[in-house]
Length: 112
Image (cartoon, rainbow, N blue to C red; front, side, top):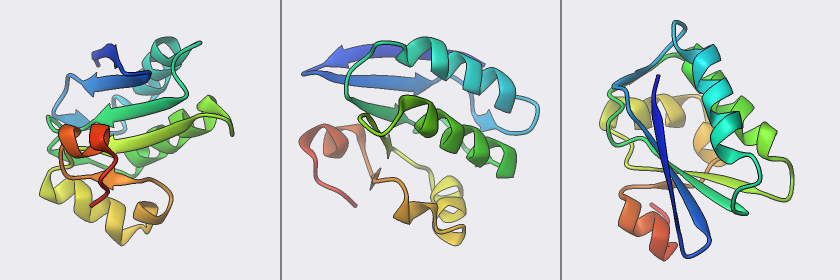
């Protein structure tokens, strides 16, 4: 499971380089997120635009990544495809994370 990271205007953008975050990838995703976000920006935006499928393990891995950041840092999500967004809304995780339709919306701070 690959992740790429850039920083723009004090916002760390992490892009998931896989079309799935599922049980087979959840542990690796958490480890990669920990590595990418160590000592990073206060606000992290996870770009999920390439992710077409997520299961409960993947959802749990994203929650774990948020918790790894601690209370003083924030994890927002951008570019959710319809199925992935539906999972977040059905599980009420849309009340835990700020969801943005696009990365541009996330960077401008305009929520969905």
